[in-house]
Amino acid sequence: MTEIRRFYDSLFERYGDLRWWPGETPFEIMLGAILTQNTNWVNVEKALSNLAKLGLLSPHELLNADDEVIREAIRPSGYFNQKTLKLRRFMDWLNYKTECSIDALSMFPTEELRYDLLSIRGIGPETADDILLYALDRPVFVVDAYTFRIAYRHGWIPQNIDYDGLAEIFRASIEYDISIYKNYHAMIVETGKNFCRKKAPICAVCPGKSHLPESGPYE
Image (cartoon, rainbow, N blue to C red; front, side, top):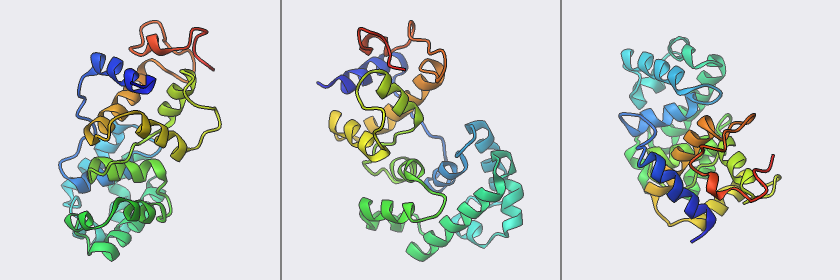
């Protein structure tokens, strides 16, 4: 068993199955993945609630909505002008790909969908993989700033590793299991927020403290 896999077990003892990433439908999860860029989930919930009140959590309704209506609805998520453009580009792609059918996306291989999502301006690897993993149940491993920080401080990776390289290390270190992929990312986020902070990490009570190098965390 790899150290990364043992780290999962330590986190699971603390958190259990977090059943992370809220959303009533796959489409709502997709929108949340875009709206959560550069903000916290509380603000995303407000934006999604506004869209729901307007009946815009349906692909066809959002596709045909006026940009100004979308802009005002998602204002709580911040960067609302930019995010309106991102949502518009995403919806144009979805309409082109499947005429806005979320179910029809299941016909396409993961590699093709990821390539398409990354071709949409404003959607990077983390957002694309959030959509693939949490909305479409595809076997991709999502990494973020917390993943980089935790992996580096525990001595698992070089400091200059890129997104895809880090994701591959995690995929190769754990079972091919979508539920583990989802929960591992969720637990990493919780650990990063509460313990493995950018400044003044709280290692003494961290659920992953036993996995640190003997010399302590790499800064």
